[in-house]
Length: 358
Ligand code: ATP
Ligand code: MG
Image 1 (cartoon, helix red, strand yellow):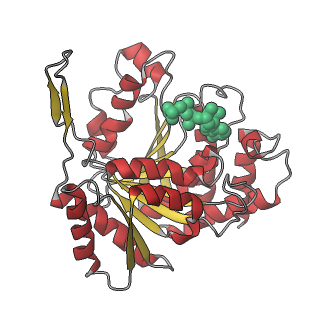
Image 2 (cartoon, rainbow, N blue to C red; image 1 turned 60 degrees about the horizontal axis):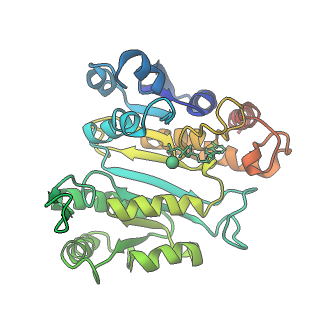
């Protein structure tokens, strides 16, 4: 079968790292005999907005729903277009309309990259954060009363549904089940948030009965963030509500060194809609145009995409190539964020060559 992939490079360094992501995908497809068809679009970026007054064409939904996956660069150019327009007009629309209810971020310390945590080496940090991506604390339910007066009251509700929570827990349990350690950690705060969080704990406990081989623990979010820093080796798969997951999915990759290498996926696991794969970093206006952005976050996101499409061996090969290059490459190959003097292209090319060589 042919996998159809929509490519949206976005803004800033998105347009610089995407060609390296594409080069790595094509190298992988050749090596593993996977038939992929990449279609590039010029929308979902700030230049498109400046020309058309909107981030997406009116028929974006019909256009993109035909694809097996969306490969995304980075969005935003705050000087030209405010973030609430660029972000809400593209990425957040995709997440919502394509029901990408799982946000998945691997947190893995790669060789040759220094963790900000003292004395941590590859192998010490290797876990996933699974964030609920559609409901929870980020509901728009609430309002303001007596606005502008001494009696002003602001309320925003947390909305959790059994359907919404169970489906992300199921994803997390199944991920844990496939990993060697088979361990799941739940982020809670049932000692302070007295209605939703004890209920979340109950859903976790009930679902764990279906996965007897997965060992389960839970931490309150405050001590959990501390343990990410103190004991990152404790974790395997960490599942969290939208807000807690938002925090953990920035903290986790931060513990693994540079933001330039971190990948992420927004997944609709049933495949009813296309899932979206993008680096964690943004458009980085400060280094855009210099050709020095690290392409690993983009390339690794492509590995997650191939794994999602059923080719875990191909995804693993990309990660192995990234690790081999980081371990062996001269400093004139790797980018400045990881201590080298190389460019986006030199690092991307080295990884693609390594993928093909095997
Ligand atoms: P956003 O709001 O979309 O997250 P941002 O500009 O606030 O965008 P990033 O784009 O993620 O944040 O960049 C944060 C910093 O990290 C930037 O100053 C940039 O120098 C650095 N950075 C980000 N991505 C990379 C990369 N791929 N390679 C090297 N450095 C990067
Ligand atoms: Mg930012």
